[in-house]
Image 1 (tube, rainbow, N blue to C red):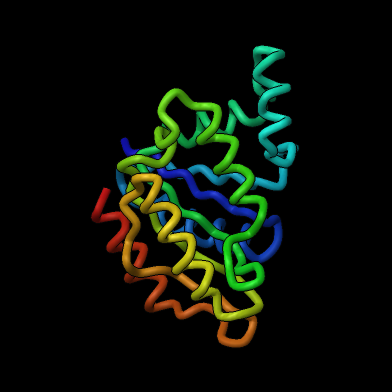
Image 2: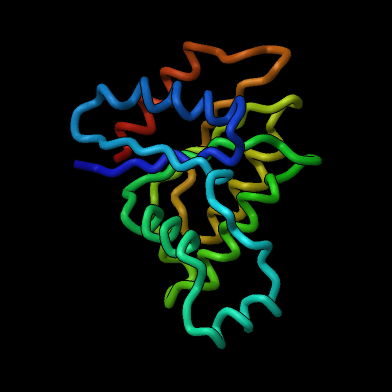
Length: 172
């Protein structure tokens, strides 16, 4: 059984998209889906000074360890996030900073993971997908060339949604 982690960076339209994806995939054999909504975790803002203080105490906040455990135990990851100012949402960047800084191998939560980037956004979401793809590839993820983008203006293309998810599931 493959473990698929679907990460939503917002509790609104991206969580809705995450649930649509889970609903579509959960009927596939040998894939266990779980959604992680980042806004339900109280992650502090990563700063080098805070990292030093936490290291001196000897333990990272439990929520960072929980998220890291989910990432490490997954076989594949689907990210659902909006485009913020033409880029990646701050909550995703913050989470990645914590996970990479609290691991022996800074890539361990991402390296080799089959990855799909999705967006539900007020804009077109393409800059988020492009920028985030570069970041995830740098972390060692196997990022799929296709993506799923749902916009306020155009909604969701059901045919493209199904084709992309079918292709992603075949790669697992």
